[in-house]
Length: 161
Image (cartoon, rainbow, N blue to C red; front, side):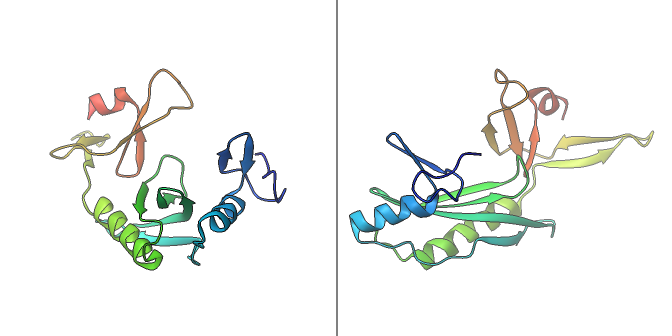
């Protein structure tokens, strides 16, 4: 974990030219440049999925010349991850609410369900269709992971569903 070149305290989040900055320092620079401040927002939020299970997310807001980017990343590796972009001068409170609504919609439907063979062995099965995202696989750089329902699957695991 490398530290921000400006504050020397927070973890690096943005590579800004040759500089490596934390999100707070980067947003501070963007605020000075564009006159728009990152409004206060919670560090995290808990959202229930379609099955009633609670998922905990870290929230981030990044000011950028082309707009404001907000994201909610689940606190477990390979979990849910939602992003949203708004205009640089948008209502940031509304943008946060829109992000939470997007996460709620994204977690409302489940695509994989746990089933059991007659012998008691359990397995995962695709319900009707499959939706998720493709993500880098740290265990094998040549074969990506598929993240579905907030869980990571290898290509082989998906083929067995």
